[in-house]
Length: 456
Image (tube, rainbow, N blue to C red):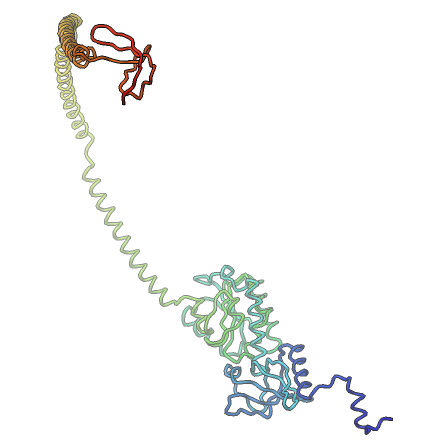
């Protein structure tokens, strides 16, 4: 019989279940959210904005049907350009999380920007990167502007300030160049197709040397038509050079990157496409002065040449007389030269005869006989001298040999002892033993003996 109370009985029966704490539950929920939901872009309206002294931002992001708590820590919100305000429409990049202490589902913001501008800016950067990788911005595709355009096309709004500025500058710089306005809308949903069509018309007519595409300044939304991909590709496909003149100097559009030349303002575009007529006039005046000076120098040169030729021009009779006189002079010089050459060659022949005399065969034979006699006498003298020298050397060698001969030593009573049958002299008792047969040579003869005793 079980005497435990009912509640205790239930706990005993549930002891095999996996029971976790609330902290563990919230931790698992947070880990699940952070693991399975990556960074997200979320758009909504700010409310309940709180910016405490810690530097962190806390707010609620909501739309018409729902809301979610958000936190953006100081190390992230320091780079945000806009200050969060109640009712501001924003886009945030965030990760989903859960605040474990209260069990509140929340998102942690990593980046924040105003909704309209932020989306447009991202689209701008994405298209810019795409067209860059395709090569639409490459410098080798840029076309040069004509130095003196014959006809200019302007694609812009007919009522905007840009067309007035462009026409004013063109009229001031070079009013003679014809200009054609192709009117288009420069903002709104219909503006991009109109701009593309205008570019196609300008290229199809083949009337224009350069195209100015532009409008006045405005916000990013106002200028967005010039950031459309269809407009960028139409500019790239244009065979006529295109100058982009959109907005102010600080405004940058995709059209600026694709165009053959970017002007900081519409007025600057007008100054870039046409030369200054006043400067050209000054150049023409300078060239006119240079041309007049050049012509004057040419005239002076030819006048001097004419005077020189006139001074050289003479009557034919005078030229014949001069030629006849010159012929007589040449004839005289020819005779003198011939006589001089004859004397020269006669002297040369005599010199050669004198130089050849020593080489006559008879003279050469006499010289060779004399040299032969001298050589024979020298040979005899040399032989006699060599013979005397050899005799003297032989006598010296004989005297030295007699002095060093062992036979001379024998004459003084010494003897030469060798083993019988050999010529090796015995100089030590170590070379013999008892019973050895020896030969002893004295001054007059030799005799044999046997060793009977060795004394060391």
